[in-house]
Amino acid sequence: MLINAVIISLQITAVYVTFMDGNVLAWLRIGAANILDKIFGSRASRYIQKPLWDCLPCMSSVWTIVLAWPFNWLQDWRLVLAVCGITFILDRIIEYLDVMSDTSLDDFKGIVNGIEWTEDEGLDDEIAAMKEDIEKIKGFLVL
Image (tube, rainbow, N blue to C red; front, top):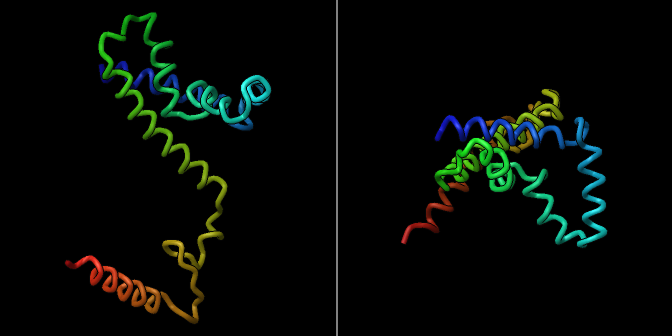
């Protein structure tokens, strides 16, 4: 079952990536989304788009049935859950790589854990301030 789940997850990921902006089927996604918006309204349209092409973990339900049915792999409902878990992990990897491709290393200079500092201020002051904040939070948590 696990091998089938990995195969289906990779197939669903391929469908998802081809519908992303700038890829081969982006025009189809945009056109279909516009048609669905006109027919059902934008809110209802989102519920239709997510399992078809817009949300990788959401696509697991519909696409697992579509891709597994011809091979009679649907003996177990856990296959859908396994595919959902694998596609969720793949979704996070794709999201991370997408963010990293949009960000150059120059954007990270002077930023550690979302905290900006200059060389004059130094990192030691920021660490000391964070430790103080942690101690304050610990004081609130103690019963």
